[in-house]
Structure formats: structure tokens, C-alpha cells
Amino acid sequence: MGNPNAAANLTAPRWKPGQSGNARGANRGYRRVLKASRAASLEAIETAIAIMRDPEQPAVARLKACELVLDRGWGAPDQALRVEAREEGTKSITIQFVGADGTLSDTPRGTARQPEPPAAPLRLVRPDGR
Image 1: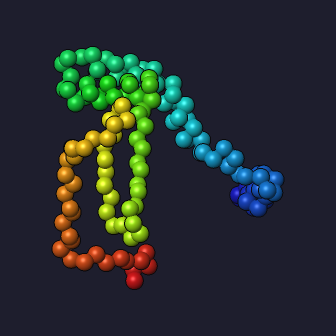
Image 2: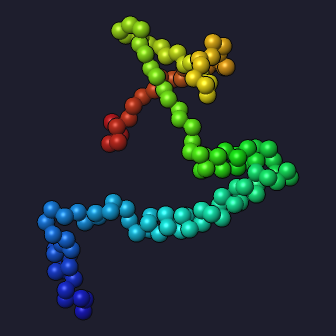
Image 3: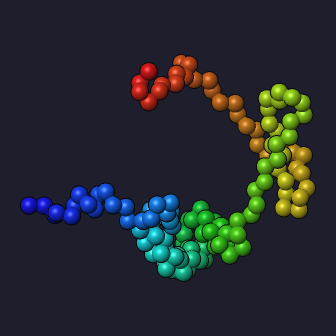
């Protein structure tokens, strides 16, 4: 025989009307992972510093470790995007690179390649398959 209170448990809410059932907005598993990550953060930054200082490590790993250490210590640099339309119906965007001192660069650093058009036209399909 099953639990005689099982039906009552399904119908009775554990919180008052108007109160959220998940007031914190995160499940217990997420909170446990967050707590464990924060507890290991000192070890993680020490590992990044060790990789950064180890000349035996590949340059890519050392640079990524440097970036991580600087971002954690000083915060990631701001990346602003300003979009201006010269006239109504503008269909292109020009990207200008700004140096750390705020000056605009007149020379482009790279040329964006136009994407290849698809071989066949794209067809949107609804979730129901139509």
C-alpha cells in the first residue's frame, strides 16, 4: 500500500498564495556548484599564475593565463559599440577601432570578407514540421 498522504502532498502548495516557489531563482545544484567554484577560486588563480610564469608552457596558454589574471585583478576592459546611421535606410555598418587613449584609427586592421551565399535557399521549418 502506498503513502496515504501522497495525494494531499500533490494538491497542497508548500508556499502561500502570491509567494514564489523559487524565490532565489536558482536550484540547489546550481548553488552547490557556485559555492564550490568560489571555494576553489584561489587555487584556480594560483594555477593561472603558475602557467603564466612557466616558460615551458605554450605561448597561447601563457597569454590566456595572463588575460585571466589581469581580468580578475583589474576587470575586463570596456568594449563599446557605437552605431550611427547617416541616413534613413542605411544598410551597412562601419567599424572603427579606438585605441586605449581614445583616438580613432584611420587604417583598417583587417578586411571583413563577405560570406558566401548558401548553395540552396534557406527554408524555415516550424517546430511542427510544416
